[in-house]
Image (cartoon, rainbow, N blue to C red; front, side, top):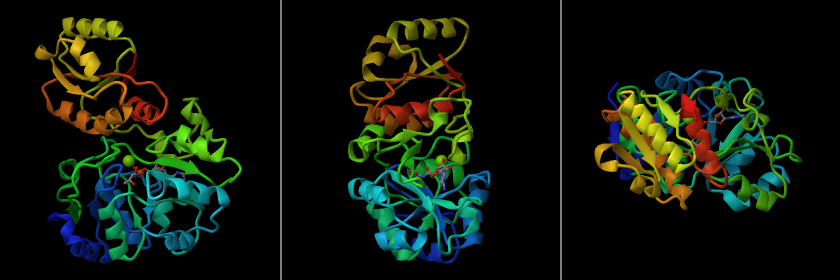
Length: 336
Ligand code: TXA
Ligand code: MG
């Protein structure tokens, strides 16, 4: 199939493809999504085929108005209204009891549905023009780092999907937070993301974490969290959290003949010998949102370089650092 590359002035064309049951990649504020009409089962199945995604991993539906929310979920509890008033449009997906004509393959047999309103003008306009909610996972091949530019999408899916809308680089760089509100008394984060635990707690009082986020042996409630994810071809290791230990490890690996690609804060890179090494900066250590925005694209970048191993600096697990570390640890074959 020929994949069309469209700029955001061509959204009528992109919407037409979607109405005809085709699959179109589009930008959101988090990462690029691979969208299809969420009410058309055949169209949704094309997403799974293009990505090579396991069919038991449900998709998020993307909406552009609160009317659509009422159409596709049984009830909107007060706790959901609070989250929506603070964080929508934005990177927070709500899991609620589903209703209405959502295609069976969107939810993989679950009674619940994940729904969010993306904070991106192109995404919102495209959903509006298509006239239906769009089921959309991240627009990468299953297992690869999520795409933050249209060229990442092209790299993974060219020839497998109908079109890619190029809206430039995404802002947040990591996916949305998935918040389970099926028990309104116990709002539970299933996947950390763009809206932080601390931000949610500030408006909800108390927020729970799905047990698998702290206990690796527990089964995750969000089906997608059980898969290995976000990985480039090269092995990824998470470095120790002090510069001295990290520098020692890098030297040891290089003595063993490894060619290290380093992904680290500007402060660490100033202290490491960057001139003879392949490096990518995560920005200043005090700005973890920059690290979050750069993680996936840098993993792809280093994967394309002549390195044998990718070594990444850990950040503190608080604020957006929690989502950064969650994705990094899933990408990594080894955590030191
Ligand atoms: O930022 C994002 O969320 C991006 C953009 C494109 O919106 N989308 C995204 O989709 O990350 P995906 O498919 O890569 O991840 C969706 C996650 C998976 O972990 C999935 O298991 C979970 O959301 N999920 C979806 N529906 C669910 C449900 N009903 N119950 C529990 N988890 C659900
Ligand atoms: Mg994904």
